[in-house]
Image 1 (tube, rainbow, N blue to C red):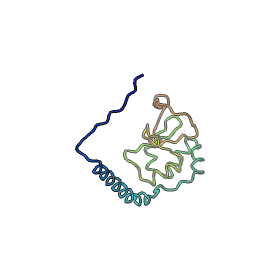
Image 2: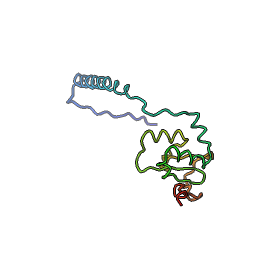
Image 3: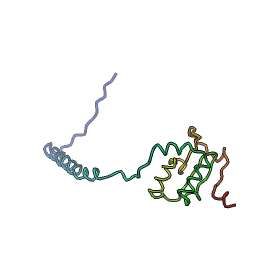
Image 4: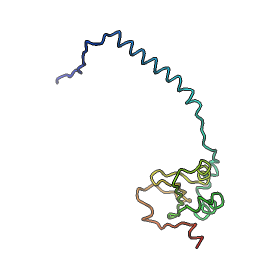
Length: 149
């Protein structure tokens, strides 16, 4: 077997003391910027609103009609955009909703699905995720439209 040695580039233009001083300067600059950014990171607080986890767990097991009723009574504007897909309730927004709305959805048992870009509620039927579009397998409807008719 032939051994391989890494080749290093040799330069005559820099002396060793100059390179060491450059390294020291870079290290000092890094420690100064880290010291300045540390208080800024320490000041960052958790701005999320509190959620009652026990109530959330209970709400996740509610059947679809009860979830829709809770959504209608607490967030009527959001109820108008809700879609029932199979047994699940989906809520989609065109823009990011306010923190209070997200907190109330989470309290009702909804969770964010990044792939489908929707807040979803399992309505008691928990299943493993699937890559297929549930609209192909299950019927769907908008309860606000059904109630108006």
